[in-house]
Length: 192
Image (cartoon, rainbow, N blue to C red; front, side, top):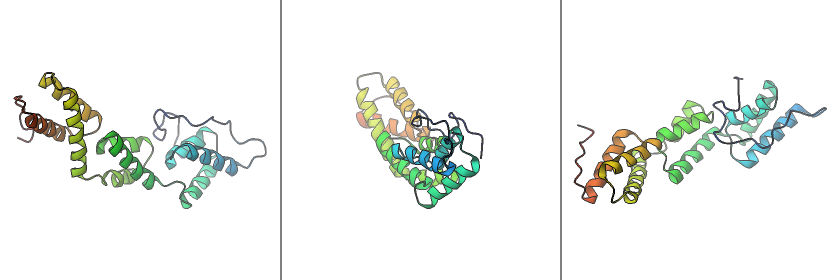
């Protein structure tokens, strides 16, 4: 098992485990304790295998015991990184408008392996990503109407970059939406 800390790659940014416990009590079965820890964490929010492994490590559960419990939880479907990733991507893309790059980064920080990350973000088609980005651009431009067009472009570009959209796509969509508004700002075509 890799060295884990609460700030490690498997830890969810900004999240805390419920009341950390010192470890298995006197006479308590270590596997029972590990199962209890995992079940408590899964009750509060879905978790990846890596996040649960990190929590067990922080609570002093032995590596072999943690692996046994995590393997059993995986076998019965309580831990499923692929299902977690698919739901995460759908939720964050739809709800927050995040692009594939940002979604992949979030999953990696939660300890999801690269193959699973690619599978989950590949479920978002290029057309779907473009439609979401276009909606974000329209809202940003509507909110900044009346301001200098160059400032509006900077704000929209910054917003899309933070949400993980490629610069070429962002630039093209902003140019198209400004043209549709009738803006006279001349933006060069990024593909030329």
